[in-house]
Length: 345
Ligand SMILES: [Fe+2]
Image 1 (spheres, rainbow, N blue to C red):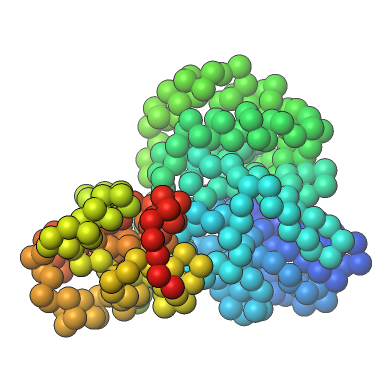
Image 2 (cartoon, rainbow, N blue to C red; image 1 turned 90 degrees about the horizontal axis):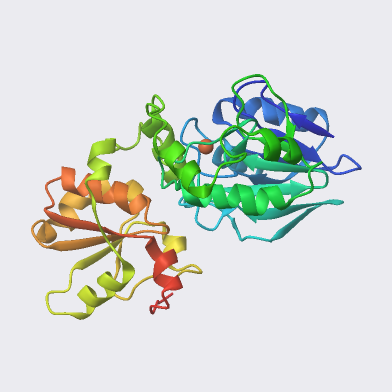
């Protein structure tokens, strides 16, 4: 069985194994979680895996809630910033569900954590490749050049007959094919990389309404009612430092406070933490900062997380509380590890 579950502009896909026992849900949306549970129960399906193709900015993801209610793991690309992603995916990885297989293609550009999923004769393209369009690349760490490469080198390398199922469609289409998009996608067909970047950087689209209200909870798994999230301009004014710069500062005289805002299990998890980094999870930061970080109000503080996304939120919150010399470590512990810098666990 294969089904799109929302009948709307946001697409959520249900795939089940041949014997209809095992299921995967791709890109669940929060407001429809009860509907998904109903469908699973009606068909007596065991939900094996929940996948988000990327960190969504235009709607609340239902992945975390569906995971909490069913005990099913959430899988996302390793660049995904959210704390409770149980499976971090890499390009080329294969996910086995009952008698079928999903192959992960890393297709960044719309966001740094965008993946596509190949399953038999079809590919789920998230917001990288849409039907006769492409997902915008001008927010949430997007990169139009990377997106062009993802589309032309990875997705267009699939057989022309491959069915394309995107995460969104605004014009009532259900699917397309790779061949059709290759020959007639108006943004990509016949366009050079340079022309595509030029086009995407000049779309002049307004930011989606309520983008931060969706994006911040999706990135942090913290509800907007539980924390006062910074505005976009506050986030944009946070200073960034590379892991190499942070390592040099930490080794020098007047070392900054290294403040790690991940969850405790991430601090001691696979990416480890920087020696001497102090842990205050983001969700606790507003209530603990004044009491515990008072001595650092005028001194250098470097905020650290997994992917360098939650740390920007934390840095903006601290700036709002009167901390003066705050910066965020770019790329988080992912880039720190990729740079081969030392960690403790
Ligand atoms: Fe998206």
